[in-house]
Length: 507
Ligand code: FAD
Ligand code: 2HG
Ligand code: ZN
Image 1 (cartoon, rainbow, N blue to C red):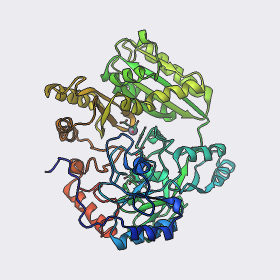
Image 2 (image 1 turned 60 degrees about the vertical axis):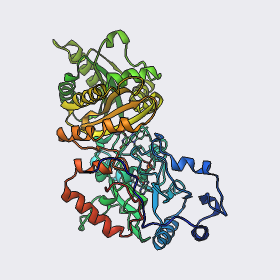
Image 3 (image 1 turned 180 degrees about the vertical axis):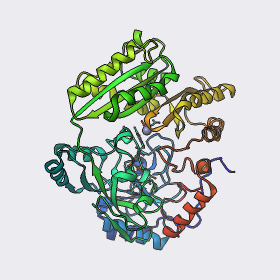
Image 4 (image 1 turned 90 degrees about the vertical axis):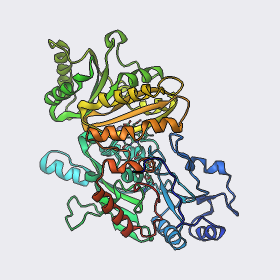
């Protein structure tokens, strides 16, 4: 099987011409079109933020970026592109980590950022249930795809609701991008995946037709659930323009604790103990290995724990609770911490329980800040995998040993190999830092080795970041030939001209 990266050539697609620009200017205001072609003649520097991904790993070729404001405009653009066989890369906040939102050849970038209106928010069901049953239920938010995740959280906060997902990129990523990548994040353990919380979508299909399935119904069992295809579709089946999503009631009380563990083997028993003692109020269980912890400290993320008490702890865990009663939840956490520390063979070396909203935020900031720290360390190769929790450390160690055996470990090549992630979801984020930048020989030493390693642990090569252009060649490690063939057939039916994010997801 082919595994080396090849940028596909798109002989079936045309580059944008001046005639196309003239057509786009009939659909969009002049300020919504950025193109290096005349008459626009935008400088390539002004396109740079659309042509480079968050990590600086993928570099796009787009000479034209369109920024529609309405679904109708998206539809007209896509119709024209279908007629002219022009490739389209939908782009949200451009925080994706697998190169999915970056053009490979001369596709246009269709940036959704100007579609940022909340269409409606319905907290009514909350009042109804409160009166009738005495407890709140989720509200329903309907919004344009280009709304920034954090803005949506801020919009519904005064109504005592939260978004069902939260991630470190919340200040830039868009709800349409979250849907299209099926983003997981820090709340998945409590609220489940977007496959469950999204009620409906509005999508512009690759021929320009608008598929309006913006349902606000909790239950709708009328045949194939088409919206699921676009959740995690990574822009290959259409442009998501609107979203209807459940918003859980804000928890009355949130607390967190940060624990240092002497040994990795303690993570699984700790997880079981914490789950047993905290029960339904546990809302996150996040893992950080020692290398990642030390990296965080060296970039000013802490300190969260006393260095002497941490000693040579091998790893760390952040536990969050979301419940209905601050005093009761705090008592439960204090009890947990005390019982952990006073056990005959303690599972932890030390731990801290946040004492204020700002300490609560700074414990989370440590975990959420690790991705940015990796950028400061060098260029990270990111492998976002699902493997059994008991194998997390084995997988990280095997990669480090591989790089040592190849003579590629050290400041001259790979300076750090680390793991952190969503233990509660079995999701490990391995970051392999290339101190002086991405180099083909480093990638060749890492891939397909890592994918084979993950497959040998019966894992998935992508737990939450998706396939994009990074892992098309690795899809077969986690999907059978029958599945890939069915995916191809679906793509062929919905996008027979292969104009929608070509070269992504499917090999
Ligand atoms: P983009 O990066 O712009 O696009 C991502 C993909 O979706 C591309 O394939 C693009 O073509 C497609 N797309 C975007 N918008 C649309 C649309 N409207 N219609 C159709 N296709 C579209 N991911 C997680 O799952 N969990 C995390 O905890 C997490 N944490 C992160 C933390 C940081 C600091 C960073 C930088 C990234 C993190 N990510 C995480 C990855 C990333 O933020 C998510 O994948 C996010 O959902 C991408 O949203 P975006 O708007 O930036 O999409
Ligand atoms: C997270 O969980 C994100 O913080 C990013 O998914 C993971 O930095 C990474 O590799
Ligand atoms: Zn993650």
